[in-house]
Amino acid sequence: MAKLLPLLLLLALILTVSEAHDYREALKKSLLFFEGQRSGKLPADQRLTWRGDSALRDGAAEGVDLTGGYYDAGDNVKFGFPMAFTATLLSWSVIDFGRNMGDELGEALRAVRWATDYILKATSVPETVFVQVGDAFRDHACWERPEDMDTPRSVYKVTRAHPGSDVAGESAAALAAASLVFRLRDPPYSRRLLDRAAQVFEFADKYRGAYSSSLGSAVCPFYCDFDGYKDELLWAAAWLHKASRRREYREYILRNEAILGAGENIYEFGWDNKHAGINVLISKEVLMGKADYLASFKNNANSFVCSLLPGLSTSQVQYSPGGLLVKAGGSNMQHVTSLSFLLLAYSNYLSHAGAAVQCGGAPVTPAALRRLVKRQADYILGDNPLGLSFMVGYGAKFPRRIHHRGSSIPSVRTHPSPIGCKAGTAFYLSQDPNPNLLIGAVVGGPNTTDGFPDSRPYFQQSEPTTYINAPLVGILAYLSSHAL
Ligand SMILES: *[C@@H]1O[C@H](CO)[C@@H](O)[C@H](O)[C@H]1NC(C)=O
Image 1 (cartoon, rainbow, N blue to C red):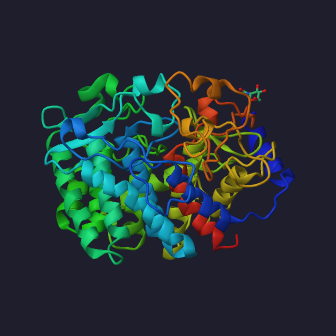
Image 2 (image 1 turned 180 degrees about the vertical axis):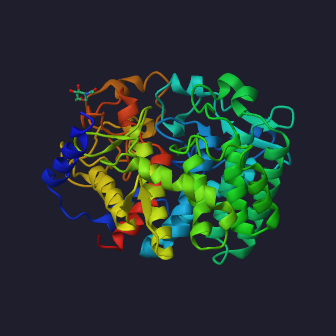
Image 3 (image 1 turned 90 degrees about the horizontal axis):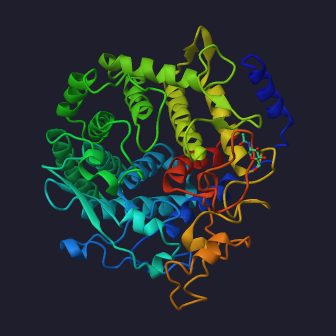
C-alpha cells in the first residue's frame, strides 16, 4: 500500500477534471466569511447583512470592554487562543501576499484589524490577558443565534498567579505580526500594536504556565493547550524580532532554541502547535544570508517540507485517494490550509534565495512545492471526487448544512423575535439547507476517503473555523496573481 499510494495520487491528479478556478472570487469570499464571524457592534458597511449586533456587554461584569472580535466557528464563544492565531495568520497572509490581493487588500486589512482591536482590549490591563468570553458548556448546550444569546458571558483571564504563556504568547505574536501589516499604512496603530506585543510577551515569558492548567474546564476540552506553551514563546519572540529588529529577541531565540524545543514536533502547525511555523518564519532570514547562526531552523523547515511531499522516502503524511492532505485529528481542513500556507511561504523564500530543498537526496524545487499547494487549493474549490467546493458560496455545489448556529437559524432580519436556546434545535436537526449563506466559509472537509455527509451533526466535517480561512487568504491571493 505504501508503494501504491504515490501512484494512486498521481492517478487522482490526472483523472480529476481541472477547471481553471477564479481565485480572485474565492479570495473575496474567504474574506467575506470573517464578517459573518464578527462579534459586537457591526459597522454600517457590514456586507453579510443577515447578521446583527451581538454580545454588546461582553466584559461588563469584569469592568472591561471586551466587545468585538470573532466567534471561532459555529458557536458563539470568543476563544482567545485560536482568535489570536487567526490574527497572526491573517497578518502573515498580508505580509507575504498583500501585494497580490488587488482590491481585496482593504478587506484583508479590515479583517486583521477586527481581531487586533479586540486583542488590544483583551490585553489592556497590565499582566492580564482576557482569554475567553462565554461559558463554552452552556453555549454548546444551546443552538442559538449570536444576536439572541442568553447564556453566561463569563470572562476568563490569565494573570501572574494563573499564567497562560500559550495564549499570551500567541497574543503577542498576533500583535507583533499585525504591527508589520500596519507599519506603513497606519504608523501610530502599528506602534501601539508593537509596544503592546512587547509587554504581553514579557508577561508570557516571566509567568510561565499553560492556560489549561490555570483555567481547566473553562477552556478544555475546547481549545485545550495539548502541546505546551514553549512553542508560543519562541513564536512570539520570532515575530517580535521580525517586527522590531531588536537584538534582545534574537538573543532570546538563540538562548532558548534548545530549551524551548525548536527542533521538536517540527511537522505540526495549527492553533495549538507552532513548531513548523517558527522554523519557516526564521528560515527566511537564514535564506537571505542574514542569520547563519540560525541555520538549524532552516534544517528543521527543510525536514518539514520533505515530510509533506508524497512519493518521497521522507514523506510523513497521508493523502486521500482524491489527493487531499490528511492528518489525524478533527477538522482536517485546518491542517490542509495551514500546512499549505507554510509550503507556499517557504517556496517563495527559497525562490528569492535561488535555493532548493534536498529530500532524502532528491532535489525538490520551489515550483514543486507551489504545485502541491495549488493542488490542495483546487481540491478545496471543487477538483475532488465529489465535484464539491468546500467553500460556501463558491462554485455550483457546496455545503448547504454547515454546523453554524447563525447560518442555520433564520436571520434576525427576517425573523426578529428571539429564538431561544432549545427552540433552535429544530433548525439543527432539519434536513433543509441553511437559510443564511455564510459566504466564504470553508468547512472541516471530507473524510479520509473523500466522503462528505453535508450534515450539521458531523461537526468535524461541516463546521467552518476562522483558522481554516486565515491561511487560505494568503494562498488564494498568491494563486489569483500567478499562473502555475
Ligand atoms: C466517508 O464518508 C462516506 C460518505 O459519507 C462514507 O460512505 C465512508 O464510509 C466514509 N469513510 C470513512 C473512512 O469514514
